Length: 167
Length: 145
Image (cartoon, rainbow over all chains, first blue to last red; front, side, top):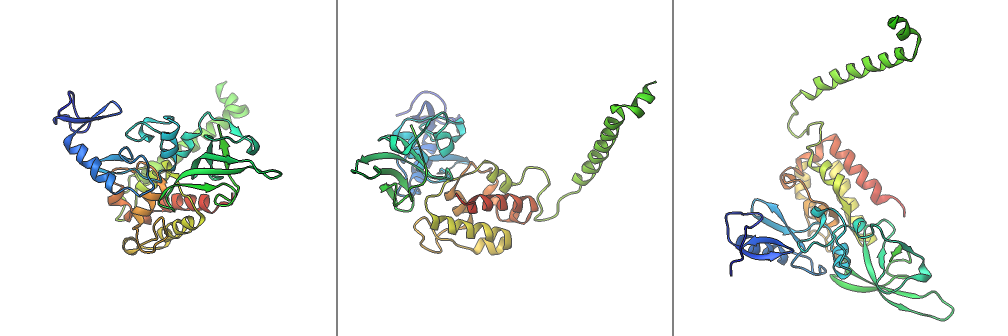
């Protein structure tokens, strides 16, 4: 079913889908679907992690999907417009933590953002287990390219107990 | 009167700097007018590798993935474009021989590459400006936490 308006990349063609208030034609819709098939398994959500390269070519967005996954989970839309997915969520780890406050390890809570020491990977705290006489066990959920899925891993072992938390 | 001021005051130093800057400007203009040869990028910023790394954010999960990327960046510094085209690298799961250089850069760096990136990537590895950008990326990767 055609939607009123113009495709943002092919103004002469009828619009078939609208994503984040942007309209696309059948050619773009097909391109997006084909690019989506090329995405690594860990990317979630998938439909919006594609971009238009020009010349009728759609491709997977560059980089891993770690910031994108956290951005969707927490509805973060910080950063320049060109550095967002089709749905308008943040793609860069640095943009994800703009304006956020660092949290001390003993104050970490479910939903806080984890960022590794070099700000090159991130995730979200999914579980805290209180252990008597020991530091809390922190579970981090993240889009893991290495494990081919959105995985849950232990902060102390998998992430070496290094990194920063933000609320 | 003004001449005396120039000789004796701060104005004289200022004039010397102005003349020197003018000479450097003229020298620079003459050098930039030379047409770059094959495989050599112009000295100004239409180099796709410089543009890529200027904007790129490294996104990488594990230390072993970093080692693969370090290998690829080192290859960019030492191999010819033809040799680089034949190189293959391990993927996210460290299965060897899966990715081209273009793929490994695209998978580990978030950046919106220039439209010409796919076409010019290999040729532009030979320019000194590219090599500087690659070295900077390598330094960041190898920097201890």
